[in-house]
Each structure stands twice: as C-alpha cells, then as structure tokens.
Length: 299
Image 1 (cartoon, rainbow, N blue to C red):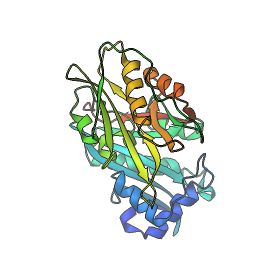
Image 2 (tube, rainbow, N blue to C red; image 1 turned 90 degrees about the vertical axis):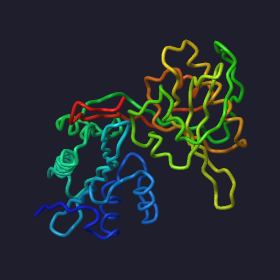
Image 3 (spheres, one colour; image 1 turned 120 degrees about the vertical axis):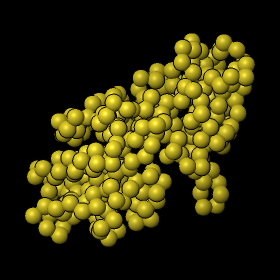
Image 4 (cartoon, rainbow, N blue to C red; image 1 turned 180 degrees about the vertical axis):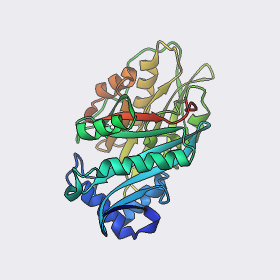
C-alpha cells in the first residue's frame, strides 16, 4: 500500500536510497552520498519538513525535495527533484508526489511554484502540464571544453567606458533591474558566499554577472560556475556589457580551469552569443516551468 512521509520522518539512508534509485537511469549522473545530500539540502534551502518520500509498503518508491522561501515579497516554492524508482513507475507515483507537493505549497501560502525539467523528458513535462505548470522558456547549461583557451579581451564597443568591480553577490538584489524570477539555483539566495561582477557606466550600474569559485582541497582554483548575466533594460549595448563582464571574469582564472555556465536563459541572446564566442558549448537544455497559485508573483 502506498503512503507518503516527510523527509524528517525517515532515516537519511532511506531518503538517499529513494534519490539514488529514482535517478539511477537519469540523463546525467545525480547520484549522491550522504554528505553531498545533506550539503545540497542546506545550500539550496530545501526543507525536510516539506520534502516527501513515497513508500510502497515499507520500501521507498520515490521522493520530491521541496524548498520554500520569500523572493522579492512573494513566497516561492521549488521542486528540487522528483524521482520514482523503476519498480514503481507506471503506477502514478510521480503524480502522487506532485499533487502532495502542490497541496503543501497551498497550505504554506505559496504564491508561485517552480521547477526545471530536461527538454527530452516528455513524460515528466506532460505530467507537470496536467497539474497546471506552464513552460516559461528554455535554459541551457554551457561548458568550456577541456584545454580550450577562451577569448579574454572584449572586442565590442559600448555606449560609454565600462568600469567593472567585484562585490558580494547579495549586492545584485539591490539593483533595480535584477531578475528575481527564474530558476531557483540562480537566485542570489542560492549563491551563499559567492561573488559577482558589476559593470558601471558614468557611475550607474549597467549590468551584473554572478559567479562561484570552487577550490580544491589544496586551495587551488579548480572550477568556475557562471550564472545568468543581467543588463539594465532598454540598453542597445547589452552584448558589449556582457562581453566586458565575461572577459574580465575569464581573465582572472588560470588557463585550464574548468568553467561552466548554469541555467542561462535561451532567450538571453545577448549573453548566449558572448558565451559561445568565448568557446563555451551547450551541454544540456531544460525547461523552466511555473505554477501560479495566487496573483502575487515576483518580478
């Protein structure tokens, strides 16, 4: 008989079994050990009391990790991963998890529910749409191939000289053109302790580029994660600003450092063009989906 329990009601080993079994045959390797699982729950503000595990009798058959937080005055929820074990597929387990999650969102007064799904996962997309989620656009993950030597010098002209400074990532939230809406992992609240570059022209902020430096156990820079670039609205030189920001960031890392761009909206042609010109290549494509539960949603 199927039943659902919250994550804080089950042992960590059971939750980990549900996750790893459900994602064992996924498009990318999402397997985790206990330390990585706990770290992800903490770093991405996932809530054990709102995350749920599906059981078939006493056997874990699936789970959904959920996060809820305030975003620019609205309460936003994120489905941070739904997985159903192979032995339980075709029995409605995904729908049970999704409907229970949405019920919990409503109970918590959530305004907007969000998730991301690989574009090739047609069954999941169809399920989300049946439950009311709407496709809001494609995002891409980009990777800089091993051994690539990206262009480090901006070659595009801007309307006026651009000054670039590095700041704490929290500063982007204060910019009037910061985009609060979008994939959860790109929110400044998910980038704990990370940094950003801010472009300024004539003393006014013109653009931003959040990023994360990842260091090895010996203190060496081992990887760079790049998040969506933002530019003040209505600018004709958006690509030049993005080009300047990315060039400055890449110039700060040693040759051979791995670099990856995360959840870049395909609609942001000004930034995808800059990434691709620098040598980045698309690795994965996902759909960003939303379910509006009230009329109050972040901008």
